[in-house]
Amino acid sequence: GETPRNPPAGGVPPTTDLVLGATAGCLACFLTNPLEVVKTRLQLQGELQAPGTYPRPYRGVLRAAVAVCRADGLRGLQKGLAAGLLYQGLMNGVRFYCYSHAEDAGWTGYPGGTVAAGAVAGAVGAIVGSPAYLVKTHLQAQTLSAVAVGHQHNHESISSAFKSIYQQHGVVGLWRGVTGAVPRVTVGSAVQLATFASAKDWVCERQWFRKGSWAAVLAGGMVSGVAVAVTMTPFDVISTRLYNQPVDADGTGKLYRGFLDCILQISSREGLLGLYKGIGAVYLRLGPHTVLSLFFWDKLRNMVQH
Image (tube, rainbow, N blue to C red; front, side, top):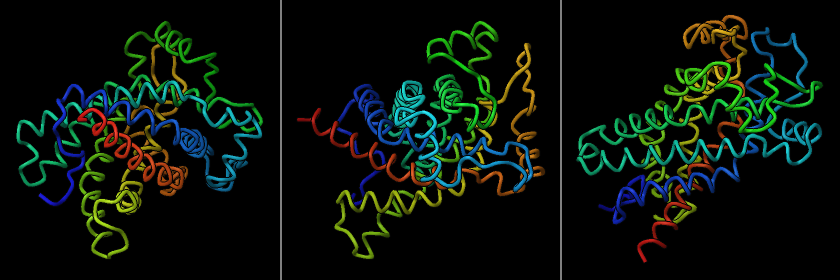
C-alpha cells in the first residue's frame, strides 16, 4: 500500500536484514550516546532522596552535558560507547530478526499484530542485550567523586567490567536487572510502532512536509517520541536503578528487591516525578535515534538491493 511500513518493506532476506538493522542501530548510537550518559546521571541523581534535599550537579540536559565535560572532558560524553554499541547490535539485530519472522509468518496482517510483534521482538532483544546494558549503565555512572551520583562500580574498562561481574556473581549476575529492561523495551517498542506510522501520516496531512521525505520521518519520529517518552521514562528510570544498584555477595540488591519494590520506593520517597527523571534526555534521544536508525537502515538496504 501507500503507507510506508515500519520497518521499511522487504526485498532483503531476514539474515541480511538482521545485519543491516544492527549496523543502523550502531551508527545511530555514535550520535546519541552523549544523551545516554546525561540520562543515566539525571536518573541516578537524588536516588531515594526527597526532592530539594540533595545537591544537584546535573540540571537539565544541556547543563548536565556541560557538567560531564567539566569532570571528564569531551570523552566523558562517549563513556560506555563500546557497551552501548554491543547492546544496540545485539538488541536491534535480534529485534529486527524476530520482527521479520513475524512479518513472514503473517502476524502483522492482523489488527494490532504489528504492535504485538514489535513488543515481543523488543522483549527478546532486551533479554539478549541485557548484560551489555548493565555494563553500559555502570560505566556511564562512573565519574569524579565531586559530581558522582548513584553507586560507583569503578570498572577499569568494558572487558574488566564483564569479567568482574562474572567472577563475583556468575552468569546470573550478568543478567541482573533484566526484569526492568524487558518492560522498558516492550512498552517502548509497542508505543513506537503504534504511533510512528500514524504520526508520520498526520504530519503529512498537515502538508508541512512531502510524503515519504526524511523531514516527514523526522517530524513523525519527534511526534511519536512524545508518546514513547511519556510511557517509557518510568520504566527507563527503574531499569537504570536496578542495573546500577550495589549488590550483596549473593547477588541480592542492597536498595531494591525487584521491579515492583523499585516503583514503590521511588514514588514514595522521590514522589511520582522521581519516575520521570531524565525525561528530557529520553525524548531528545528518541526522535533522532529512531530516525537515524531508520534512515541508515533504509540507505543500507538500498545499497544491498543495488
